[in-house]
Image (cartoon, rainbow, N blue to C red):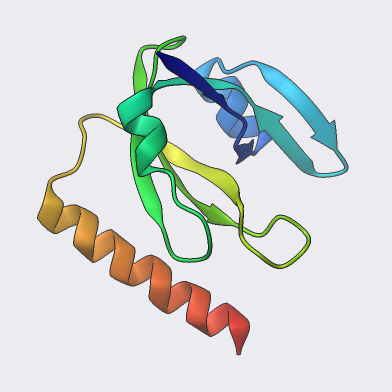
Length: 108
C-alpha cells in the first residue's frame, strides 16, 4: 500500500529533484511524495521528528523533518534534502538530537 504525503519544500529543491508542484502559497511550496506504508509510519507528529523516506515517483530517498503547520502543533513536514542512502540508527539519533536542539532554540 502506498501513501501520499505533501511536505513543504523550496522552489530550488523541487526543481533540483524534479518533484511536482502540488500547492504554492506565498513563499511556501508543497510537493507530492509517494511513500510505502513503512515509510509513512516513520513520519511523526509534533516537534522534533526526522525521517528518511523513499519516494516511489522519483525513486530517491529524502530526509523530512517536522514543521509548524500554522496552528503551532508541528503536524506538517518539511523536505530537508535528498540522501544517497538511508541513514543508520546512530546517524539518525544524532540528527534527531540536532533537530530537537534547534527546535528548542526556536521556542526561546
